Length: 147
Image (cartoon, rainbow, N blue to C red; front, side, top):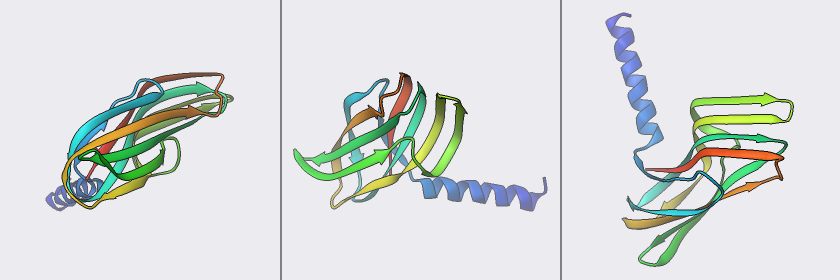
């Protein structure tokens, strides 16, 4: 690889990382339900990513209902589709065989929030498995918060 090509590749990777935002923290899930984390968020846009390793038979939906609170007051909400279209996918692998479906990887979901002020923010998320799958395994379905 030439020096120019190496430099161009490094610049492209740096731009991709900046465009993706800084990882502030995550809310971990290994099953459907509610979980939360307190994260130091800045004022401005908040991006939500999913880091999943799931498999199911039949039809299923997987989504997050998110509430952001500061000083005990709700300041933003978002609904995100973990299996839907993503604006960025990293290491994403999907397998579809008849009724069997498997999804693994990290992706920026098409949802977000905006905070008016910075500070410790409680990110409470509900992971909802819907669609009545015949069987489902959630090895990981972490909600990743980036700014």
